[in-house]
Length: 495
Image (cartoon, rainbow, N blue to C red; front, side, top):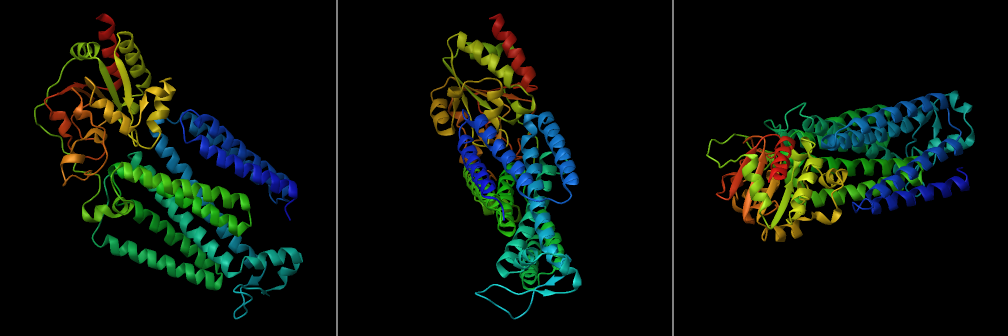
């Protein structure tokens, strides 16, 4: 039995997790919320080591040390632009760990010489166990009862669920990482009969899950894990373009559900609470991101089979555009009354957040009113751009959410689009045949003039042409975002 003091500490850790989620709901309190959550996790780990009689403690501590060093090294070295990839990897590891723990728990009764009996029920649960050999005598009665409990229908159901969902989350997260890191194509990968293959894999997984619950077989559970890995790959392969970060959030919810089910298997209330929190928050975030993209979750996952993915052909247009140099653009900005900056992933890639802050400071000194229009999925995930700009000490008050930003854009003299593309593409409003049609966008085209800082005429992440580039009000300044902004800063100083 776990000591009462340890249970109290687990409750404190669970409260920390809840407070962490509350803190993460606002940029002002996000750092504090993250620290509160980290403290809760640390408390839970320390209490577990103290409260339980743990075998192989040396190996476990070594694994913890290796994981801590690797995690700290990776987190400190990762660029802010690659944060979604890091989230995908951490999420996948969590799902894989949950599946492995469930497999190990299921193997314990087999190693103790216990099998699930047939035909004996007690209120819907299995109450008896049968020793396969004399090795079961090496366990105490309490240990045998605990192992026999693993063979109840309810616990086996939770175990099979954890194995399947954890495996799906692991393999799916690996594919999202490979897509975002451009180690494989970001376009949807489909093949003839793909929906039927995926459907067949799901049916096979369901059948194996039921069979595993009926028999308690470790071998079947391993096969179930392999099928789950295949299902995760098939789930993510057809997803392309701007939809990939949304799938990361969905898989994060899967991991939370797997951890919650694992908490039931392990009779650990803290895992149950933590997993439920992650599952619920991941589901809410997935729906919010899908709404921000103007798409349903089903169309995100399976739209490629009907030609509805947000990944277009990626062709470069040869239509004429109006371009200018830094001096001309600087004059346009300097004599504007109101400028709204629309930052995008290109700003993040160029690590130009400090330079844009310097430019804005210069404009404000000249009496120009400036704000930042933040799309919900600016960058690649919700909050990604907010964190990036906070790193440059941009005041929170200048960060405008989409509804507010669109009202400000209609009264602005200049919309300065820095590295954004899909989130200002009018095709989302005007072109029913466009793969991003219906996606809520920032109304940069409603500004008096548009200045577009862009490296080239290549399409954005969705792979489709942006009509805003050809608007008579649009002026393009070609080049790396940081280099272009630096040139603008220099030009403004010389005015």
